[in-house]
Image (cartoon, rainbow, N blue to C red; front, side):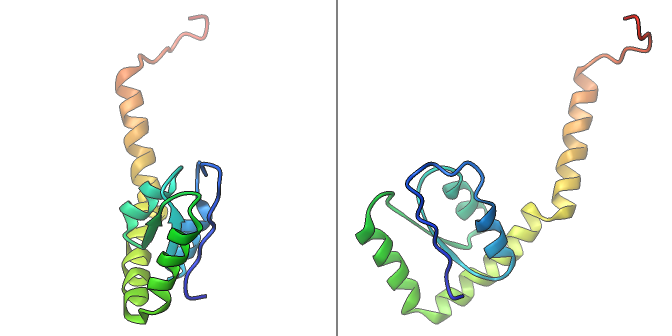
Length: 114
């Protein structure tokens, strides 16, 4: 697969398939709505196009279809960044940080009767 595109008409809230594609070294082209802008900007692994605009989608796909070096660059950058920002180590770091913030802001109750 040279490029993955799932041009949803709805605002995709998670975009896990974008992360999966990037983790496997496949750049993406997605509409600029839902979770896609954040994922593409944070990873640098693809292009965004105007939502609900088939011509804009075709242009973005064609631009990558005709530029194998650019595809490889987006794939490498996206793969590295998805692992850095969304890999297991990142999830552990963010979970620990969140739990520490919650622990500092919430008094602990030792008496079950409260």
